Image (cartoon, rainbow, N blue to C red; front, side):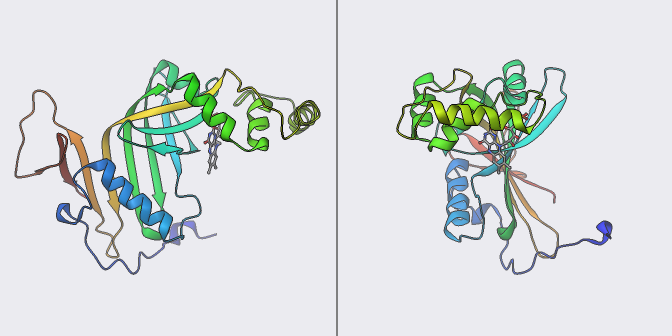
Length: 230
Ligand SMILES: Cc1cc2nc3c(=O)[nH]c(=O)nc-3n(C[C@H](O)[C@H](O)[C@H](O)COP(=O)(O)O)c2cc1C
């Protein structure tokens, strides 16, 4: 296969994306506008799928996909097993980077943030709202642990299906729950047909840094906006 020759033209982008084109100068509202579009146009299979990068305390990175299960002024939420690889890394280094990629729209959003666990009550509430198969799945899997074979998972699932019917209440495992990512940086990326892509970054000024109007625009809520070279 000629991988080096694989090139996908970004056709049909007939607008530029500059500070004046933002739906909002509040990055959360800007995210919301792009997310809505990704959902409404129904061209993205899972608009809430995001890659999540974490790192050990020594800086060794790892990345995987997760589903965003909510975003608000507080931050972005996802659910997982706290004992998984990502959980272990977040315990020792509670920062992460997430990325949404909405390919048909030629858009991506990168967010960096501080991470904390959400409350046990909120995790339980969400766990109880999940379908039977998903709740059992959380019980079956010691996520990221080495197991002998596929049969091990299937046997465990079968046992649990015998133990619990669809109507039984299933207790959330203690090791399963949500995380909240509190963003300190956003980058909105709009692909362009001519490959000179548009990149707008929102961040806060450092305490020893001055606002420089030649390269910065004022956003809402103390955010500053900068254009990055494509
Ligand atoms: C589209 C997609 C969505 C996923 N969503 C989640 C999720 O919300 N939570 C989760 O724990 N794993 C999710 N997974 C599985 C993870 O990518 C990963 O295999 C698992 O969480 C273990 O990761 P870790 O060993 O790096 O901790 C998803 C996978 C895909 C492809």
